[in-house]
Length: 138
Image (cartoon, rainbow, N blue to C red; front, side):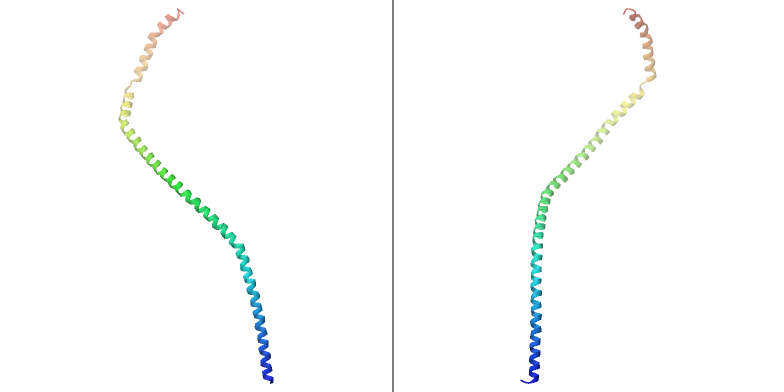
């Protein structure tokens, strides 16, 4: 073999050794990456499963709560309608009795309180001598 053949063979061996070195590095990095991914999966998957279970529980609670909320809204709507109806009935009652109350107030205003007071005083004056007379027999 000649000199060029030896150099080429030396370069070929050197290149093969470099490729082997880089292939080993790539293999080690691949193994480390695979182990890191497995560790992440072992750590993350249980948390994901727990979160999914919590979400499922929350969804089932919300599913149970929605009909209750709908019933409450229906009850509030009915109560609002009843209050509105009661207000309308009150208005009707007030309007129906307004004339009666007005007439009653006119009759009260027509009463002569001064004359009534005078009559009471006169009655008291008339009854007083009888009261004194009957008090003597006690």
